Length: 211
Image 1: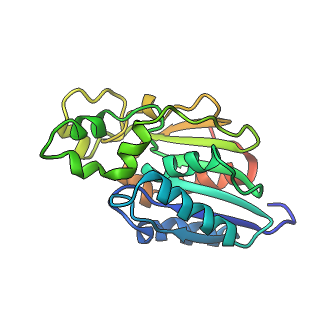
Image 2: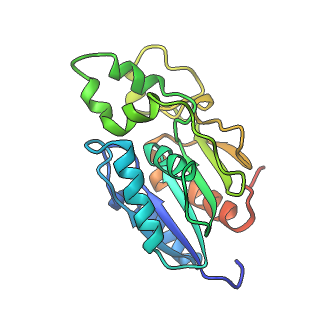
Image 3: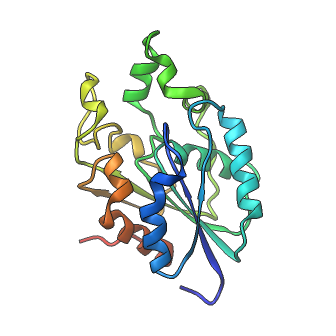
């Protein structure tokens, strides 16, 4: 870590709230970081409203340098914010299982009238838009999972490798500084010490630990 005051903000995914990120908050605090959890109505509110809420949260967060760690849908909220006027203190972001380039599981559900509501407004808003331009000044690290355990296994046509919900290919971002695939499931990322170690590495160095 540098001599600057560095702060980490954790952002959860769909159907969740900030409590699911308590393990990562604990591990990062143990590593010496100031850590805050951001909660938002991932299912009920639209993308623009959640981006606005996150922008306000970041603006009010103290620290000379801010890093963002987002799981799943939280990552698209972060990326949309970064494509707009984002806080200049943001240096690095880590995305865990974020379906940036597509989401077969979600779009399959959205195509079914009975199940469409499950994906929520933010998901629908993101995939109704073109992919946003990303700031090159912010370093992006992508963590994908390869342990296929989860709800997505019930959805036909989900390509491998996947984390049980999102495929590795769906997480790819051309502008990413580094990426890594780990033997974890989509929800397992939330309680994985391996993920925690990789997150800490990217925050400190801008790179993951590759065997």
